Image (cartoon, one colour):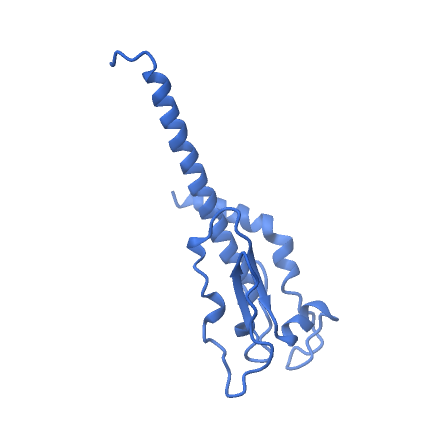
Length: 157
């Protein structure tokens, strides 16, 4: 034991600071994982949403993910070949996100915007005329995505 009568206070302060750092680290991890899950739900689809219908064979690649700013993607179909599976939309390092960041998932391509915002019906392909909502399910599930991420985080400890 030390002769300093305030040692207990100092130790408590250090423990409290470590606890605060752990809470912030865990919150940042939950945010990073949830943001990635939501972005993937919009673009590629997962258990939360069907993703963009790839009727045009390049719609997924028209998406760009921006952190704290909108990153515009191509507005026209590429002139030579398909850019499908080229990978640029998911080039964001989700593990670098900080609490307070805003993540934007955007496309400048006409067809994906048409599918979600106009009559919400596919124009082409075997699913022509069917509903195509792929943003609203993610928006409606945001709280559940976070809760699921927290639950998975707890079970992995």
